[in-house]
Image (cartoon, rainbow, N blue to C red):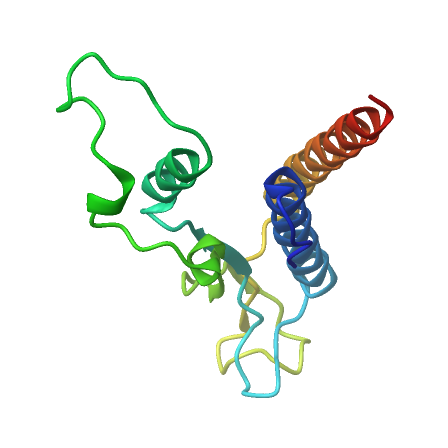
Length: 166
């Protein structure tokens, strides 16, 4: 999600809100399927989680943006190079994070339930690898992160509003 303009604080908070929302949706899916012993492919449900990868050149791009908007005084020309001479390239697509859904391939517990239709010839059932306690802790952390991003977005909004009143 990109809000646009010169309000990068809005964009950062919006990206954080989006990632945490996706994370909470996956956690809810994991909790809902915690007792699923057979999916469409005949295997027990496997836990899903998000991996988020940030752009490694983000800091360098921010320095270039600062150099373009204001002149920096230096005591030595080797301290901060001219923004035009830097090897970094500035583009809007570099501000995006890579968010991937990953499946945990670890095996779940094996439980003796001879009456289950999913039991093997010895009466054992392979269960899901979802741990409800872990999922609830992850849900609380994602919820707190969502709230923190929402607070940051509201602060940015208030700063923008107050600057319009000056």
